[in-house]
Picture 1 (cartoon, helix red, strand yellow):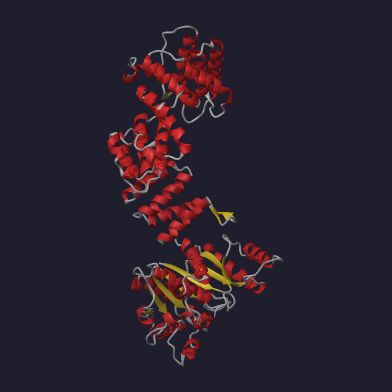
Picture 2 (cartoon, rainbow, N blue to C red; picture 1 turned 180 degrees about the horizontal axis):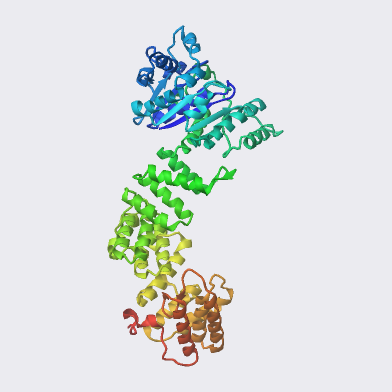
Length: 613
């Protein structure tokens, strides 16, 4: 149960209206809410039409008077009633009014000496008992207390004893600022008392004029409030709303949910919820805010590390079986590089029923590193069976999954990919060195179904994977499909075609490599060791051994500085280590020096082993 008091130093700022709309909104979200009218001198909760009781009901003053007369705390259920028109998804709204609406209410209220109640009759324990009854008898998730204004005898009960949080509702003028300064200071001082009670403060600036602020009057006032009251977040704004419906005390959240005023009250609810880590939505909002602005609240000041860690611990304890909360908690720890916590929390989230691809992929990676290929594969397959995996997650799951390619291609995630997405996944698998899987993906659709700007890249990637897996004849057919000849090819396709022809016929054809040499001076797309390596082979194939040697030296220098994601060798058509790349350069160097027996290793694969007729 989380108790929130709505307090204003001055009346007329819309405090009760904000409370009622917030209570109705939470009840309609499935929460069990109790609204308590502690504005004893000017009560009004039961004056709202949808909150009005069907019959006279005793209230808070009557509860206190019965205690003083009997010496025992009465049953709180006799002093509350339910608002039958409010509540959805199992939610309910209950009201504890100030007192029975009878002519003698004023007399009954004035008969209570609040100072004496605390000094002589254990008033503090009485209200602690009442608070416990709210939770036990009603099972309330939320309690909203409508407090009296100004400095009063009961002010401390509402703003310091009862609440876990206080909503300060104010109009941004100097009178409110002066009055609120001491109230806010006293609330924060509770953290330094023997109870060490830290009360969360939320600020709502109400009745704000919706006018141009040409002279920065409002901006300066807001800055003064933020500075003087040490606000952790900018105040929620509720603008002045001119509507005759206010005369009828319409609850806008319920009766006019699309109005601007209703939207602004929902922002008030969002702010209140975000401070209650026991509430599922509150925990998720806190984690969302922390991910969006890591450890920074509203751009004003950072949370103390100790406070942050305590909140994260509380969230985990309160929602130990909630897969969604554990998942977001793990994501936050991942963003903060807390590897041990991430692994533990993702695992807890999955065990609690989380099927988010991100969580499953994280555990799959961890299992793979721990040399548990079976477990890694199982998690990867769960990703591919999901209907919410995006293409990047599909590509990673493809890499980690151990099932046959045919099985992977029939999974929900793969079948949901359109041709451009399949093209991207196939090319991503090439980068990951998963050539057979990449081929299966790129062969699963017609290149004619791709936008024209993607076809060239997809064809290039598939030709590389054909060559890397020994399917050299397929590479030739692909590169010449549609009647293309060397003059139609770009530098990459021309080189790959030349290598594929060499592999399938057993004879070197200089023509494709001449195309490479002609295009090379104007080609700026290719960088790194692989480009210089390809040029070394191309110049050798055209008989220019001197330029070939120059490019070989450039490749040798470039590989030492290479820090890219993958290093591809055209001598193998595989991702290779730096040392393997150096070995390939030595082999190419021997070829350039005149050893015509040298052949690229990819040609030794079955489909490239002998000339084709």
